[in-house]
Length: 355
Ligand SMILES: [Zn+2]
Picture 1 (tube, rainbow, N blue to C red):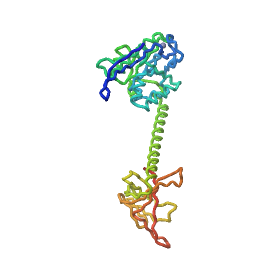
Picture 2 (picture 1 turned 30 degrees about the horizontal axis):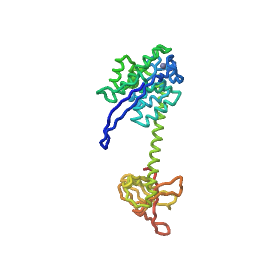
Picture 3 (picture 1 turned 90 degrees about the horizontal axis):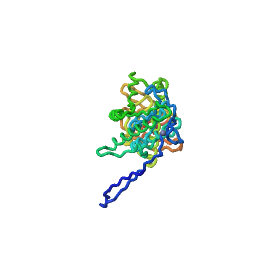
Picture 4 (picture 1 turned 90 degrees about the vertical axis):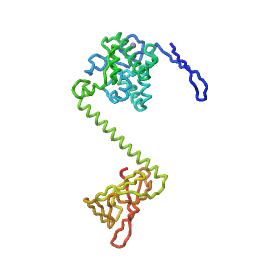
């Protein structure tokens, strides 16, 4: 069956263009359930015996999340305990439109055969395709399309081998849930997990398992830490790229902190922060005295205080290609000290540790 929509559009140059949009509706899109004896399908992604660990619904069931549940709770959908889920084409299209990373994550779950996630192309199915009604916005139209698909599945699965098999619509939208229930659908909000957390409800034992939760938290913390590392590495890398083309520059900076054997310098122009150590092995013995009450750091006869202005030379040290680093050398004030044999001044090298 072919549905076509024709409309005229005014082009930028003022001409009139006639646009014909064709939408093919098909009869050969199947439900994907192994419990179904009606559809002549080969790929039965959805299992006949669904996960019954859930206390949410004692009957065997397939979950059907709406767009917002996928957008905001994709991490829960990724959990191994969640399987046998129907992802509608309407939902996939909306997610793709709204977030490329989440679209990728849901596609990854669909490709994982252990998860039994089935994509149902409801927008091309003769019985589940709907037209946008007058006065109905795109969001409401899509919510209705999701309810129509859920309704179709509910009716369709009445012929299934297991008469108890149900489709549960997952939505966080109260109105959508009410409308779904009005038309005889099973609908749950995903906020039930919050109710579970305060003991007002119960859910999959695995989701509440302390050790499983701890493992999940460890994983989250690990990913967060790795993200921070890569963020810092990225800043370091781009700072190096920046100074590679700059050559050697002299810049004004300020002492942020004084420590027992070091000062931390901030260069406001670049937002660059670095630590200078005064007990470097390459340097002759310097007389360093730290006073934590003021606080100050006295290096030979030069005194460093917080907010003191200093001038540093910044350059890229690429002597070791695998470990290039930004090097700063202190230009002002000049740290002078008396050596046993002769008077000389030393230029101190600053090493950048943090940005
Ligand atoms: Zn079927």
